[in-house]
Length: 252
Image 1 (cartoon, helix red, strand yellow):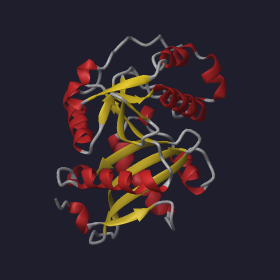
Image 2: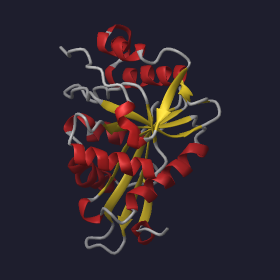
Image 3: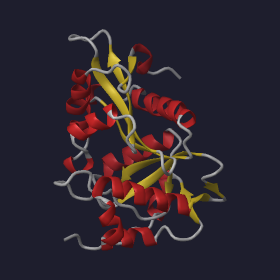
Image 4: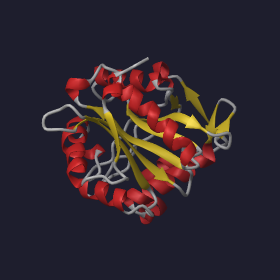
């Protein structure tokens, strides 16, 4: 099914990107769509695109309108963080400019990103973070769940919170982890390999909050205890109420 993406041009921000386009993506697409605590800084975003040997690396596709005035307005983006050491790709952000939503651009971008990145980088698992309607704006959170369900996502039936992405940010509690694609190495009957998820979370928290936090922070230890065992089950987006929702430890 065609979408408005067919009339757009796609830009890979890792290949001959301009700093002006990167700034516009951050200011015009990311900042209006995500809370301060859910966004890494623009400076970190820029450095992780430029320094291609980093782990994690940042991957970014941007849809621009070639007929806009001024030209090449960014209208949608999908941004992934590639954690090479664990083979996990985290879809960190996917958003479309408010006046261009409802035309299939976001779904097309998301599918295209997974189709391109999953086989090309040797990925074992594609994950994403989604707000829990029980704790956020219910109507908006359910809309996002439905969107991610349409692009093939399922929820891991396990608690999760997003780490601090900057020193001045807070952790984002009551989030879901979603699975969009998995290799045979990651799949288990009824779900996903728990040891892979646990290893990824340790790498993710170490990259964002530091290795010492992974070793000593009681809230991270609390979270990782849920990822013991062999398999973490999957449930459909519509069945999000089946995901356990324990109250996390109080943050200092």
